[in-house]
Length: 117
Image (tube, helix red, strand yellow):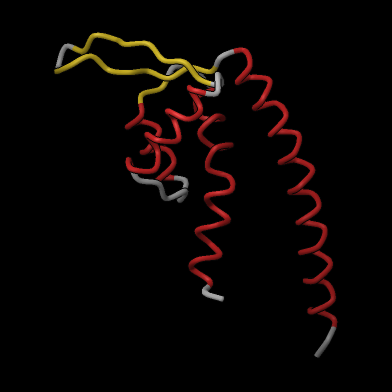
């Protein structure tokens, strides 16, 4: 198995959660989302982000509004719907449980490996 493929799959698995979390803080423009995700080393490109945003909107988790821009065409700002907030809360609960479980396994492995010569 290729480690890079495994890393990509791990990132894809949490991308939706990260996007919803970014949007939960307030109205956000897609390029600002891309910048924050990239800064956090969650590598994503426009070709991945926009279809995901469309899917999340079509499922009722997101909405958007157009805001006039003084420096060009109107901008689309994304916001969570009430259903999106509930969904994010469920994902947050799952994330906490999952990260505790994974950390438990990792810490146990680290302790075992550090004891052996």
